[in-house]
Amino acid sequence: MSQTNNQHPVSGIVRLASQSRFDPINPLAMALLCLIGVFFIYSAQVYAGNTQYFKQLVWIGMGSVAYVVVARIDYKIFLTYSHYVWALAIILLLIVLSPLGAARGGSQRWIDLGVFLFQPVATAKFGVLIMAASILARSEIGSIRESLQVLGKMALAVSIPMFLILLQPDLGSALVLPPMIFSLLFVSNLAKRFFVTAIALFMLLLSVVAVDVYSYNRFMEANNLSFTNDKGAYEPHSLLPLHDYQRNRILSFVAPDQIEPMGIGWNLRQSLISVGSGGLIGKGWTEGTQAKLGYLPRGVAHNDFIFSVLAEEKGFLGSVTVLGLFGLILGNGIRIAGMARDRFGMLLALGVTVIFAVHVFVNIAMTIGLIPITGLPLPFLSYGGSFLLSCCILQGLVQSVYRFRKDF
Image (cartoon, rainbow, N blue to C red; front, top):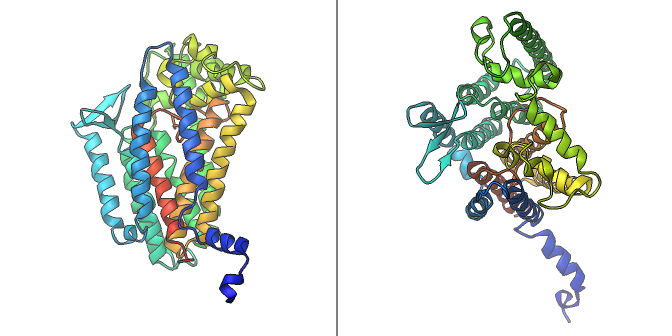
């Protein structure tokens, strides 16, 4: 018999598995998280008579199609058309700020397409990632002096969409971009002095914001103004481009007693009660009292605070399960980045992973009081069509990096 016929069947299976063109880890974790999200969106809204859970199922179906389409495209095509992708993202952000944009709750973040509202900030994250990865993939990075031209291009690619996002205003989404950019620069071997300088500037900015919030607190107290009702009163007296509602979020984190009980601090208090009352195994699905009785407002329970609902109803074990699934996605994303056939693929996979890591950390940290409330949704769990669709597209990009990795 030939050597091929005498080959042990187990070795053949291992070889085929190692050469698979499809990585099942992230899709399986995504599917489980989406399923969990539908159940708890339903639970958060079960007594409100809403049908967000059904709409979420529709978006999951659309996101699945988008995931498959992007995963089957060789990611290198985005290297060729990166400028067009970035330009499209900028155009959509400009449309949001035009009369065609739709305003909700004091923010203009959507484009009304009739059937649904589309949030272009999701496209902006994709466009900035593609553009940044293409710039770094085409450039040689060394010392800061040698890399000034590259850093200038990166600053331009990031600052324009960030500025347009801040104008909506959407501070939370804008803050997702810097960690992603810094991670790409870090793995591109930029001089460490750049990061030391950036950290120093960041600490300086935090100090300036802290002084501004302190001055805001003193101003409101001195003029006997309400933190909830007199929004915008301090804005003409500050040089920082912050809105008073954003200052309220920071103040509710560092000094919650300064904010009215029914004001901005209310959501945080109710979220902490929800998470803390879940115990080890939770109160049971649809049995959570905070969302059920409306203490955790129904306007946020099914999106930004979906983790609070889950923690109350499934407790510590349910929370750890969700964190484990996210950890699986993030760890596998880093693994795929290391397997990429080129620098561009590595940067794309890493950038997507960092975007997800920021969303997961910020959302969960704000629900348990570790950071101020920023309004960032939790991937695959929070209700929202545009965001869910963007998550599927970004993960499809990671699958594309795997499918067209260096093994083939």
